[in-house]
Length: 442
Ligand SMILES: [Zn+2]
Ligand SMILES: [Zn+2]
Image (tube, rainbow, N blue to C red; front, side, top):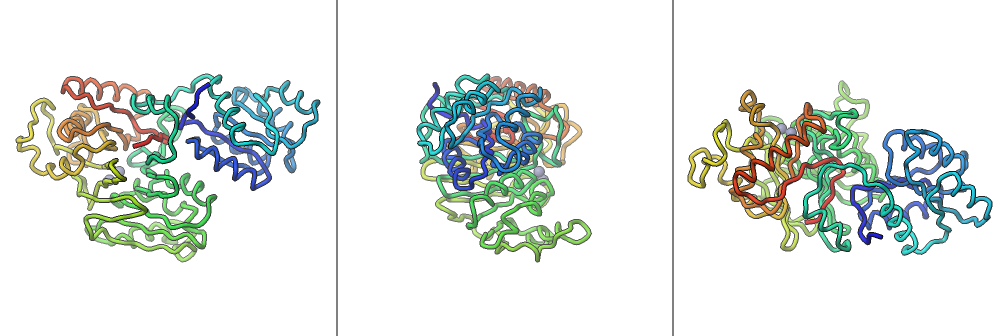
């Protein structure tokens, strides 16, 4: 039995008693699982049809469709037959329990339950279930999964890892299709960077937890970094307080660029309908202290006023630089770039900015071939991004902002090419591709 949960695992809790549902969500989220809730069987099946979880915790006595019927439907559909189902019930009638197991439930948990019992059952399920093929994890993450989880560590979770435009379809199933959004957290503290379409799903989670203050840092206002904002649930809920930070734009300011998305011609609901308290702040200070995190920023090489952020927590650090054309135009060998090379002249500040961070989340959108026709589009070739990882001596690199044309197989090949390049450069930095749902600790 493994002691540590797999952070990529998704659990759907179908439970109509809200306090029980919230308790399950609270306990399991604390163990690193991604937990969704549904309040009855029909809504549960609907959620499963949109996104198949790894495990379902299913209440037996549901309003409307009975839990046993939900189980039957799940187990008779070839698409969902393999999903693990753990029943949860306050009833202890043996015929009921026998039938649930006969229909294919993994186990039955009795209410009220002890949290140890819950963790034991869930972890026993995952220890037995076949591993789902996910994009490769960094060695660091694999090591972490073998160690007990600490709630006292700072984590990041990628909610959107695509550049330009969201994508959807079986060929994108593993890396995901949402545009830029990442959450950085520590216990109750939390920061959000970028508001691409990934922000929508994060908003669903935050709305459930109830009103609070949220800080959202925006690298720049290209669509793929702000398009999730109109769909961000907390913005519509009174009591939420949103502070949105961004660089002073070259033309319109941050607020008009954000609220312009809610113009009547584009969107059915207007900014005035958002009931949260929303404030826009320009990044006029080089350093901010937010929720216990020290945040600093630096301009990147990208059209528009684009920045990258560095978030420090205690001795740990993460830099998020999603859009950056490092070594603008350079197509020579990455081996030929030295600290003194003149190609670095406009990029040195950024190298210093990310120097030595524990995690660098940085793009490498184009292969070397693709970059030949994309110079000036604002994105790096993988070869040039490898040079940044080498010069800045970062401790690990998470490649994000995947091109919408790059499907899962292409991204797998591209990651192998990136590893080869790093090897040729003599760089031992572990590298991994970001995917929607990737979570790791600093
Ligand atoms: Zn972008
Ligand atoms: Zn951009």
